Length: 252
Image (cartoon, rainbow, N blue to C red; front, side):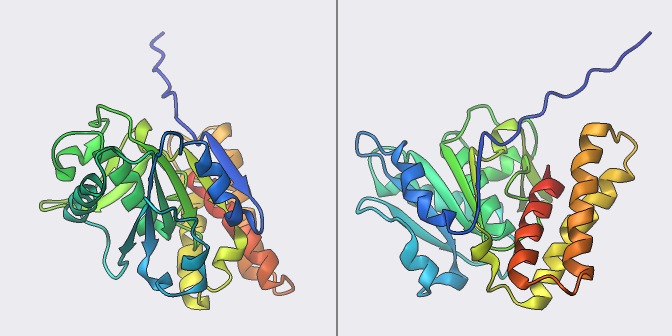
């Protein structure tokens, strides 16, 4: 009997969840900052000059790069931020942190890989093309739905095609889920990104290779999405907590 091999899937190493956990980011990064190690922070430019920017645990030697989310990230953008990061100090950063939505998290995931791999980002669009693991990658979603915080893909628009850098190395090392960070998301944008989670679950459940492991994540994500969008008695605070978990499970 011919039995096909099942992929050994890489998952998130560490996840911290709960209101106010953003304030633990400095403690998390301190484990990597030995010997004057420095960090690159990617921040959605929506937060420039806002309270969240002031809460970022920037140290004197760190680099803060604003990312516009008007358009999807490109391979050219990844090459630019990697060049900026390499020029910032005579040694590579010990970590990269992406604070924002799916676009910002994908930039962080891709940049953390490209800083340790030679060449241009478009050369690595595809499956399992990355040769070297990247620097420590931390993602902090400020909107829920895309599942980028746990996925093994960094979606980029290249000079020829839109295609992800996809491999086990693309999965972030640390995800920080703080429901307080998504409270300010406008209702329409929250709905559209929240529907990403719903669709991810539907796609998985209707997939030809569905198994009980995937089904467990998908069904729970679907249940949470239905609560968020159909239960009018839920407070916005509780709904956001459920939506953040739905996004995580949908991405898984």
